[in-house]
Length: 138
Image (cartoon, rainbow, N blue to C red):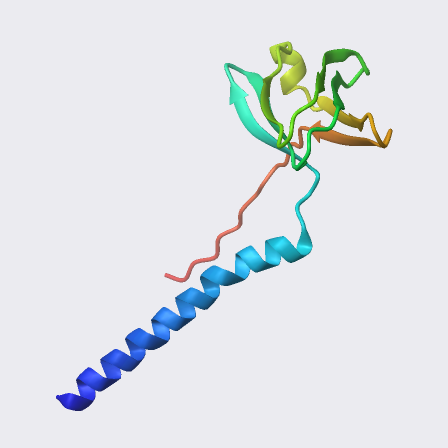
């Protein structure tokens, strides 16, 4: 009985140590590697309109010019952002037929006014046909 309790205590102590080390690692890794300066995510569709999330990981307020273009290079949206840790969702009013076409493409350009560097991201639709083959023994 004493050995069972002693083993249980040792396992509990080992698990606590393991979880504390695992919980500490991601924070350390993120600080060492640094964050991406610009993050863009496609969140999905809202009433057949694409929704994207733009997040600028800047610690100090810096001016950025954000431009969203369609596949024909027409400007759909443009704005200046001058905030620290800027984050915004964009709901783009695009024709349903255009957004469902295989040639659908959006370009998101983020230009830093201080460094004059432009990062361009492309959002496009990919269609795939999946065929499964199942082999079963009876």
